[in-house]
Amino acid sequence: MKVVLQNLTKKFPSRDRKNHQDVVAVNDFNFEIPDGKLIGLLGPSGCGKSTTLNLISGLIKPTEGKIFFGEDDVTDLAPEHRGIGLVFQNYALYPHLTVRQNILFPLQNLKGEDKLSKTEMLKRAEEAANLVQISELMERRPRELSGGQQQRVAIARALVKMPKVLLLDEPLSNLDARLRLQTREEIRRIQRETKITTIFVTHDQEEAMSISDMIVVMKDGIVQQIGRPQEVYDNPVNLFVARFLGTPPVNVFTGQVKDGRLFISGEDVMEASGIPDGDVYAGVRPEGFVLNEEGSLGCKLNGVEVMGRDISIVSSHEASLNPTVRALIGTENRVDIGARHDGGEVTVRFDLVPHKVFLFDKVTEERVTALV
Image (cartoon, rainbow, N blue to C red; front, side):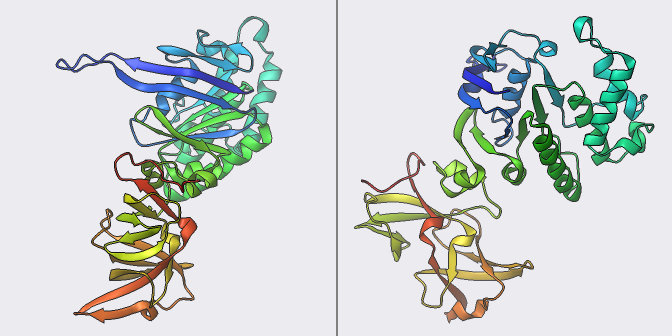
């Protein structure tokens, strides 16, 4: 089931006595979510992603715009008639019911033509439990389950209705790191098996990038960029997107483009052909540094962190907007190859990988591209 959002806007009345202007939580959101895909809504707290999910679910009504499920306008349709499955951050399981009873609960509330026989309800509950791999836990109560198991019960309860659209609102936030990794892999597996159109809300960019077919990056209610995770990571449209995606985060320097070259603190660090002259922010991904004792960019070495497959060189630079500059290099490198002593300080030098460097206008913070 494809989901189409047309000029979707949600405004809330201001609670500020001095400023009566409405708060815009979602601002003119336009997007078509393809049938059977998993879409990640991504952004910092307060960006409007959960509000967008609640608009799609029908829990709140839009101020402007329309929502379509397939060709059907569901903008004014009640949540229970939209054919959705909802999974929340806090699981929301009934503590006095068993796992089986929790999964059965949505089916027991079906009425009219949708009402099922007891045999059919039990069959569906078993199928949902098998799908999320909790069939052996059906007689337990929520207090007897781990956080990851409770979340699987919540997913099974959402799937048992055979929804057209599955909505997940930060479903992994209450889990520890190892369980988060395991559960997000399970969510992706389940989504691929069921082929249900799924919208996954998270503030964790690693979660969104690892399981989503496409991601939507939001800020202050406005969509910043939509695309495949790797495409957005490799080609951010503005400084916000570049800084939000990536672990460790992108390194940002103040710089200047002059005569087709990029300068950082007076050092000519790389070619910038076709870029108009002017002040810029230069974003360099951690993997965009190449250790070279004759490299064009010199940084003050603060330390080295060995992380198994990679080495993280931690340094500082007067033009860096980040407190530290982090460069990731392979373990086959020797860090001291690029270091020399200048006045008691250790300087490490790098060359920059061109396609891992992004230039942004210093005023608008929009991506600067070469003039054709």
